[in-house]
Image (cartoon, rainbow, N blue to C red; front, side, top):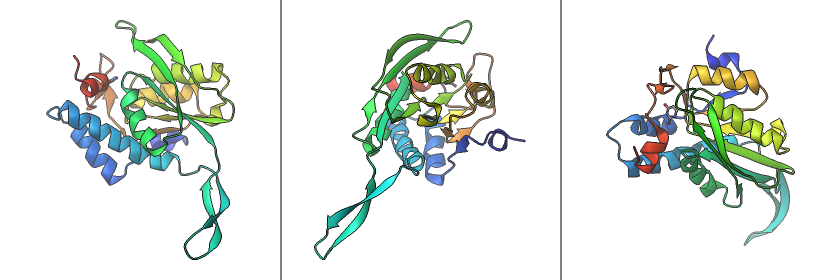
Amino acid sequence: MNANERYPNLHVLGHPLILHKLTHMRDLNTSTKTFRQLLREISLLMGYEITRNLPLIYQPVQTPLTTFDAPVISGKKLAVVPILRAGVGMAEGLLELLPSARVGHIGVYRDHDTHRPVEYLVKLPEPEGRLFILTDPMLATGYSAVHAVDVLLRAGVTANNIHFLALVAAPEGIDVFFQHHPDVPVYVAAVDDHLNENAYIVPGLGDAGDRLFGTK
Ligand code: URA
């Protein structure tokens, strides 16, 4: 049984446009500029899918011909919360779709030896009644993702108001994530083969933060 079948809250958004753009991101010859642009475009496409169930209400609108009750999003408050650094690239795409969303930040780095997350920054908007979308392109070991959800829960966000959005996931990270947070939906573009001994996703796309910001 693959991860997709095992976890009902795992959503693999394998739209051809997303997969095509992801293939270009994986290519080591893709420039920083193009990588950044593609990450933004994929995030926008994924954002379209994950906002599919936002509640609608009907409000009168006057067209040139008549007045009728037309659908608008019901004022659900939203927050986009990138996990630093690479999550920022995904947040930018989402914010093009959701320009009124608040933006939080969770800063964690991966300890070189243990590969466990070390927190250095948490800045969040008011949680009350808000849907939080956490972004991190790589769901690798799963520990940063689990930690970020823990941070939101501690801040008073309920599990049903959290979505986790990643680009590429490793099966190992998916297992870890759902062992801790089975109720939080995870949206990814692809589930790759495995994690290597340095906790990089294979085939993956390398270090997403370095490729996004042009660092080493
Ligand atoms: N973080 C990355 O940027 N890439 C990986 O493959 C794993 C974690």
